[in-house]
Length: 204
Image (cartoon, rainbow, N blue to C red; front, side):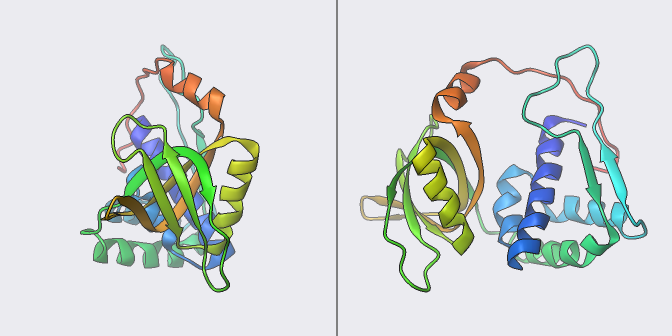
């Protein structure tokens, strides 16, 4: 199994957790940038549909150092199948929607208005794309994570639909994918080389 598939399976688990807490499929849509797809979602449905608990374990090549920050064990349940089915339908409908993922530092928090999930700014730490982006969230809970990232000086990954309005770049219907730890540690890890070989999983 390669790292890309590991990221995709991990993103699917996160999207399921997001759905359980919010009832929203936004985690699946934003997870497209991490490899979630209609095809992969259907493959996981095939694993989980007839099992009380379906375990998926990654075995990395023993000759190489396993990549850091990736889970190697995942569990899916038959109760996940209805959600995964809804997600697969949504992904099939939205294949034409381009999602953009940005990693950076939260630099601006606009006062949250009643009925609005919230807006904040991100200074991108990536070498490509816009340097500063204003993020309009799709989910109210994600605003609290942005506040935490700002207060604790953490790198944050957000995903959404990138649009240009005048001199401003906006990320609409955005979701906070995850916080990536202290900014200085994240920047150091980006500079560290990472190269590993992995086994393949036939299901994907």
